[in-house]
Length: 248
Image (tube, rainbow, N blue to C red; front, top):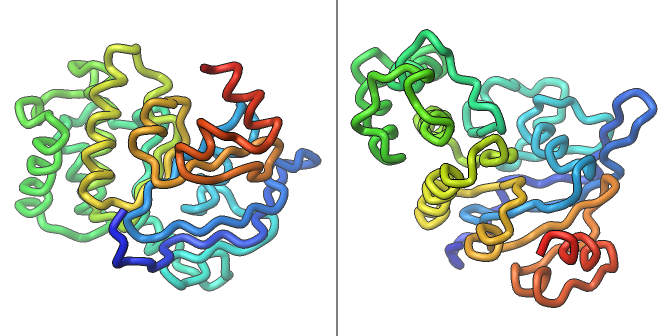
């Protein structure tokens, strides 16, 4: 992360989210600065993915406020689509259109949301697909690509929108182990390039190598946070110690 920039891109204040009687998030406070890579760890059901989905309003918070670049996006008058255009999101499932080529999958939102013309959208699509190592696969349809390649198309599609922050929700958990490395490699390159990232993952090596800050969540709250060294090598909370003990 670059030191000269302390600008807060995402600020979460007292975030709560319930599904009927089930309170999944119980008051989350978190700030993410420009160029920072924040990796979110925790057991299943701890609220990690729900928090990420609240940041781009795929889930509507039950309480609390979320700010994106100083605009309160949880305010009633917020233009949700304008916010989403600046927040790239990559999911566990690739969500590609099966009948479209990789290139057309990456062009579509550029044309629809950013109103780019076909030539520009195509140029940027090829550029981003090349950046994720798929320059020779631009005319392949999803069924002709491996899972790892499909996920890289999904990353290229998000990057083509010029996002100010990228959210990764378990982006590698549906992939075969040998394909995980390729996708993590792309994510590492993005981090090196200064992209602001919030990453929910079970990939501890990635968290240790790439994160500026590691957040450990359990039971809908942030239990502990710190540098990778602090959280992995000297966890303070018993819950963090227990979680890391089970996976190491």
